[in-house]
Amino acid sequence: MNDINRASFDRYMMPNYAPVGVIPVTGQGSRLFDQANREYIDFAGGIAVNALGHAHPKLVAALTDQASKLWHVSNILANEPALALAKMLTEVTFADKVFFSNSGGEANEAALKLARRYAHDTYGKHKDEIIAFSGGFHGRTLFTVSVGGQSDYSSGFGPLPQSITHLPFNDIEALEQAISKKTCAVIVEPIQGESGVVDADHQFLAAIRKLCNTNQALMILDEVQTGVGRTGHLYAYQRYEITPDILTTAKALGGGFPIAATLTTSEIAKVLVVGSHGSTFGGNPLACAVALAALNLINTPSVLNGVNKRRELICAGLERIANKTGCAIGVRGQGLLIGWVLRPDWHGRAREIMHAAQSSGVLVLVASPNVVRLAPSLVIPTGDIEEGLGRLEQGMMALAEGS
Image (cartoon, rainbow, N blue to C red):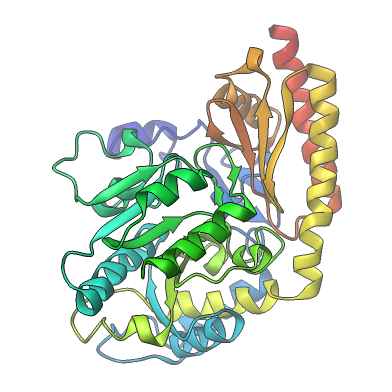
């Protein structure tokens, strides 16, 4: 593939992405290597996807073993890996039933359709309002960008699905005033990852749960980014001590292999009768085999307890860099979903920092123009954390001196 390079993207791909100049070709653990064999320490994790790093041997083994047996049969037939994964997900969460798809957007699409269908069949067609929150992100389908609270993602794609109300995040009073008997669902993220790594208040999620109960509405918890150990709990709702009616999970669920799931109770699931929803590749044996291996590895005390220990190391390093450069005022988020909040005089420079970090051999993310996001592997070695922070400091010092 000597003729494949960054220019190939501009030549052949639609221009909805703007990838950086390097092209990774191999990865091992928390280290990536590009076409020139240059090494990068990965603090990005494929945007909170590679929860066990790159090419984890047990995930490779699970994929290789399944690949030698059965790749795809469609949902005309059930398959063993999908049934085993569904069983495990119901055993480790509140849920009784599972629907598999391929991405977080699809999982949220299914959740929203399920909520509307449940309200329609149980209470009547008048109960169709979905309440969501400004700054929220739930996917890229037409329905999910309409529900998401960032207008840039839905602009120009109208007419959009209707009966969707957006409220300020963490504003209990606004929710109390808006929710009513016509509300069929409230969808919320425990941490708004795409708009700056903003945590939901405990009282806010508790109020959503209480008000949904009072108004016979369903609480949908979007754990696409926070789920599968990212916050130090298998799912973030377990930390908040509330139970949703529907939960969506993707990203880290397959440890890098595309898979998503929508979880709910038997009572709610019963309205998705045969033919009412589906996915050609959802529940694919390859994806489910890898996800089952990933869950078995992640849902252990050693991994989950290690998340916050790694967070402490990273946050201490970010504080040290901020003190040297004056670039940031603190961190947000939970576990290994970290938002590094820039000082006012550094506002708008998050993407510049991402590029400077890359030039120094470490990969980070942007959560907004004013917030740098880190979402490394849940098992990233201490040595990689220290070396990655050192490289990040080099990039930041160069930026600060240039400023």
